[in-house]
Amino acid sequence: MSTPDLPRKTRELHNHHFDSTIWNDFQFRDDDIVIATYAKSGTTWVQQIVSQLLFDGAENLEVAEMSPWMDLRIPPKDIKLPFIDAQTHRRFIKTHLPVDALVFSPQAKYIYIGRDGRDVLWSMYHHHATANDTWYGALNDTPGRIGPPIESPPESIQQYFHEWLDGDGHPWWPFWENIRSWWRIRELPNVFMLHFESLKKDMPGEIRRLAQFLEIPINEDQWQSILEHCSFDYMKAHATKSVPLGGAFWDGGAQTFINKGTNGRWRDTLTTAEVAKYEQFTLDNLDPECARWLATGAMP
Image (cartoon, rainbow, N blue to C red; front, side, top):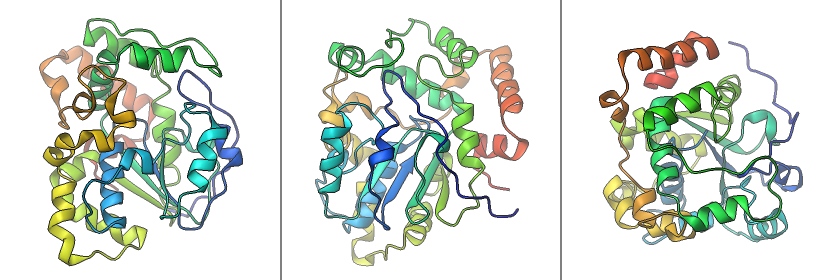
């Protein structure tokens, strides 16, 4: 495959969460790291991994503060941009936008994380169902929201599944275009495709691959500490460091946000017909190689 052209921004994306215009005013540094996902695909996990590589396995890093969600409209960009600009460490920020809604730097390093859409949905439902009034107030009642508010989820996760599929990501944002947009640029030298399932199967190997891509020498004396601090158990126990506002937006706090970190929970709930429906949507929206990667992490 020939190397694709560098992507360019062609549109803005706004909703109860997004203000994509922040990218228009962001001043890149050549060594910036951008961690991108649709959401609920391992973003917080990879932020933790990158922080451990950058800071040699240090304890008690305030990862959520160090690595802000760039295009979340809260706080507004006139507050967020000066904060990011003042950071003196190598910056690592996150985005949930498709490529064509952000400004793409040829020097920055981009990590895109994929995960089977059913696993994304199961994690998203837990995230949504445990959100508290503070979360709804921040998203729906603060100035700058464009479009309808986000509402409480239905009691049935199966209903949530159908509404998400039939409504192209409802009530969040489109799923398939996000996957397609990053898949198209996977051959660019500054893009690294990572998969949740691959991290689960071989976290040490994937961390080493990621470190090589980011050109971060691993301090072998701290390797075991890095692995420990990137484990699910450690992140669950220290969740207030990794979760926005220490978990104040969710019932049960940060421990709720870092939930199970497992795949396949949908298997005990979805019927054969519902599984087939999801798989047909996958085939209708992605090319076969991308669909296989999204389901398994296997690259062509």
